[in-house]
Length: 287
Image 1 (spheres, one colour):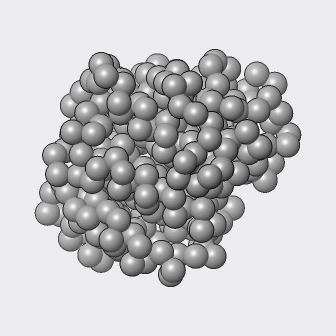
Image 2 (cartoon, rainbow, N blue to C red; image 1 turned 60 degrees about the horizontal axis):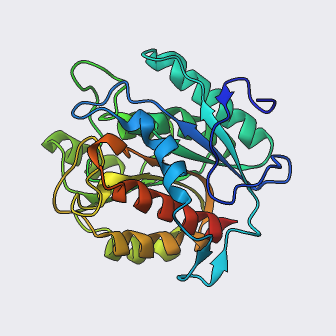
């Protein structure tokens, strides 16, 4: 791949253009699930999301708009060394740096949630006042998990160490240990269980600020998205998350990732299809 040293070009997402230079948004797959603690398989998420995207129309009924004239490029998957967590994170950081240097918006498909850490760390260097919106079933605020600092269960804690205090907003959180919620009370904005209502309540305050959005598919109830590594009952439905995504276009989004899609745990592909539809709506809104 001529654009990055560590990218393997594979299938591309629906209606992705061939021109990197004129693209506003760059899609990168991050096929990594080295620290997954329950059900592995998210490394296959990027490929499956692209595959099922061809079952969707490029036109959105929700917005009366289409992907056809949106400027986004699918650069393929990061070529990360299997089992080497730190080297993989370094590669994702290098790719993100290149995208940001070119004044483009990075959009990552996971993979496990730990991929967000090097990406946001690099985005914060460009946008020191960065605000992170975290949609998830899990707080991911543990300091260590089974003795490890780098884990999909510690990712938001690591991120909090690189951005300003109270610059993380959590939505939909319905699982975690007490210490995580105590940490959130002091350092972040925690909105447990509910997704749409608390998000809409803070939407006006978030406008004109640089925003990074990390969306773990398990924020959606497993009835609608069973294909994930750590399903947690009690989440929002697919219509609600799509409504929330429709409001992202009103924000100054400078980066995004969608993580924890695990195709092997969903033979119906409805989780991957929901992820692809979220991505389509996001690309239409931001493109």
